[in-house]
Image (cartoon, rainbow, N blue to C red; front, side, top):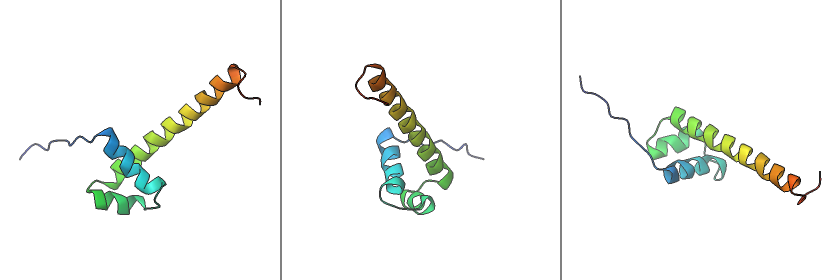
Length: 72
């Protein structure tokens, strides 16, 4: 039995893969198939990138609010 080697993907590839779904309207299974990756992998990348964007947006607003740059 041969040992399977995990593939590594660049962050740019991951972002572009997620953009196919979020910005261009592809379904996750269709985008994953066209890129040669599994649905589960693309779902995971999408969740991670979306979580990061939500947290970044929250802290960006909090920073602007705490420095008086925006009002509630």
